[in-house]
Image (cartoon, rainbow, N blue to C red; front, side, top):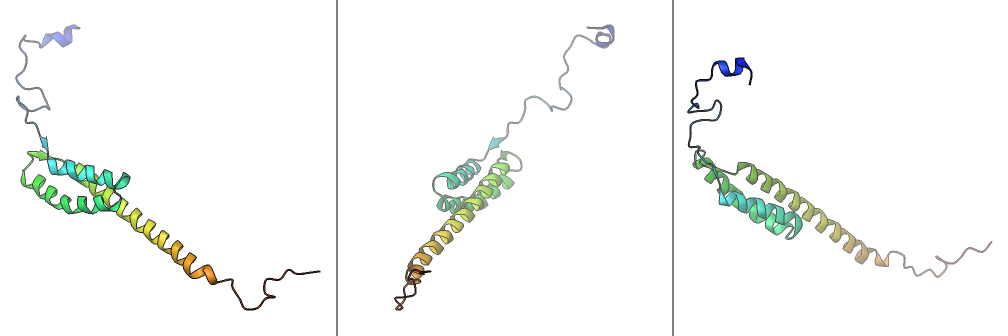
Length: 128
């Protein structure tokens, strides 16, 4: 060390480091409901599609209330937000897939008789 760094050294460690708060530190726990919302939101994207997303949206309201009522003792607001976003994405994808399958099925059922006609010359080959 150089002389300027050791000039103010008194030999005792400070009781509180600047910017870190007093010891012992208060550990913030994560809300178990926030973890459930996140897991269900991710599961709705991968395995259970829209069903788990709806359950995650229902549980997210209670999880938000739990985190806000704890006055900082519980964390997990970001997990709840991520679970809700994943849930809405999975619900939107599920609705689009159901609509696409429904349109495809209806076009096959309704459009199956589109090219039938009583006129036998309608699809006759054209001879030059």
